[in-house]
Amino acid sequence: MSTVTAVPLQPTKRSYLVYLWVGIALALIAAVALARQGDDPLARNARARGVVVTASGLQYKVIAPGKPGAAKPTDADVALVNYEGKLLNGTTFDKSQQPTPMPVTGVVPGFSEALKLMPKGAKYRFWMKPSLGYGDKATGPIPANSTLIFDVELLDFLPQSVVQQMQAQAQMQQRGMPGGAPGAPGAVPVRP
Image 1 (cartoon, helix red, strand yellow):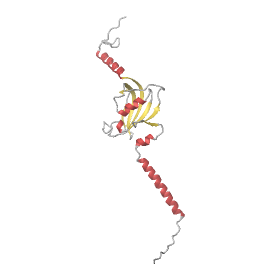
Image 2 (spheres, one colour; image 1 turned 60 degrees about the vertical axis):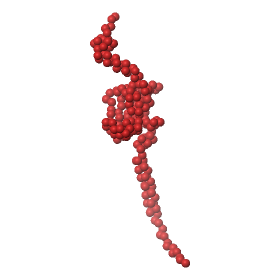
Image 3 (cartoon, rainbow, N blue to C red; image 1 turned 90 degrees about the horizontal axis):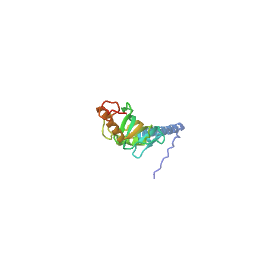
Image 4 (cartoon, rainbow, N blue to C red; image 1 turned 30 degrees about the vertical axis):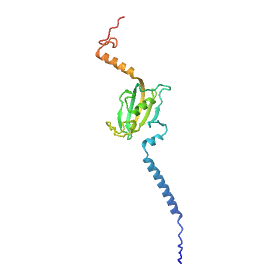
């Protein structure tokens, strides 16, 4: 028969236990910080105050609400906007120098969706995941699979047909064809 010899254990100093628990707490804090660092920027942004996420994944924040009850552009409209486009790292890839007309359906899907959310006079910030922007295609200074950020101010919008009619009239005036402004070269004289 064997016997087990009991070896008495020395009591652990209280300060060692405090160091142990402080170390565990710091390790947990560091783990949470690292987990948040690896968080997708759009997922982190979606939790920010005032950010709304649409069904497609477009994120926006209202900077200036625009005119209450004002109409919003449709697919058949041309929007007049001021805008600035940036990458996630803050690099500006495009910026309007003056109010720019944009057909609502003639832009990337996320920008089109964004324009249709805005009433006249509004200013919004939009975050677009790559599938709503240029996707896996590199376009100029925009790398493939880039998340895009736009600040957009919607100044006005008109139906596409009205814009086309205005452009046709302007071309006629430039060519000196009848139908231009009274007194313009080639215009039909107005008789009293």
